[in-house]
Image (cartoon, rainbow, N blue to C red; front, top):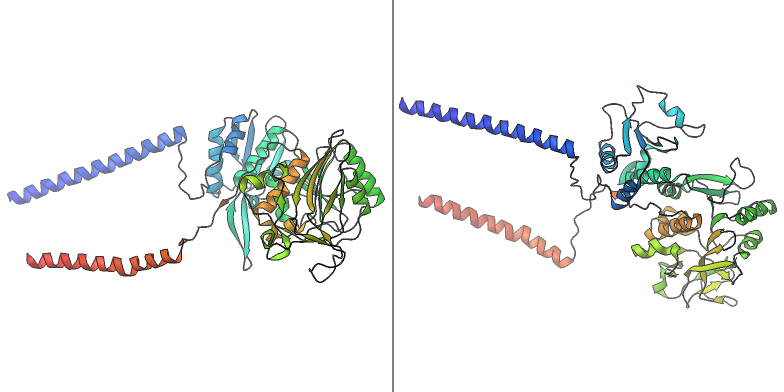
Length: 471
């Protein structure tokens, strides 16, 4: 009887301890939650720091001095938790930022003030607006992620929300949005064909759209940058006059021109004002150290002092230019001309670009060749970048080389005069596979897992079994 009373008493004590521990756990949880809510304490434990904001963003937010509202367009209860967490970090870093969710079902006409005939705002998008000027930027939901097509299915492989949001805030805070126009009418790749480049430019804060030099409703300003991506036909006389006037008034332009085009006298006439001229050839490298896979997939020599190569140099990124033509340069009064890229001394230029052989033939010219240059006019502040290849970014396969896209973006940035460009690297959403550094390490790991660990378990089991028998 005494034993039963003791047992019952012990059970009550244990129950009391359990209630006390549960109570303490609840109190600790509430206190931690209160502290987290009060001081906005958050920890990002993801490998690629998906929820964190980087130093570039923090710098932009620290300099922010105007009220900006970020409108999210989620149905209540269907918010993108990743984007919401990222925006919470933004709000934490600047008192000038406000985040407001507008439910499209409850306020179906809210987005009309931001829409045009050509653009409709989708659900789950973001609208970032300055409270005073009402200047705004729209970021569509799908543009917050990088996508990859596999077996007719789209998969999100990277997070670019920080770059898009920070670029939008930066451009609103700075005033007028820089424009980059894809010129059409000469067989160029258009915006839809260059979706990857267009989205990269938009991520960096540019307004991107196609542009016809003759038929358009938008007047160019000296802050705008014209992009000629792989023209195969020459400018008409009327287009030349329009382009020349734009450049005389301080215009900015970037030209990526492949070999194997028809003659381009009006283009060369314009380039001549900057001491440049396209050569009619195809550059071939002979030293295997200077090309990749094919003799016309050139790994160019770089002028490391040129600001157009700043990102390429800093990132030590690979740069490959397929199918290049040479460029002739001469000194011109009032023109500052800076080479960007060269071929090697062992290269040669095939004068007959249409030949089926890459072997050196009679008439082919000796290298090295200038493959790209940046030039500015000291009197009117006009700028051009001329590169003797467009294939390095005109196909998605080549644009994936980090140095290639960096060269393109830095060319546009330098030409447009866009300072303090916001460059934030995407964050991977793909789990990295476990990589074994060498074959020997693989064998060691196999021996450890297949032999050593089972033997240790067997010995331990035998030891425990022996001890129990001896009791």
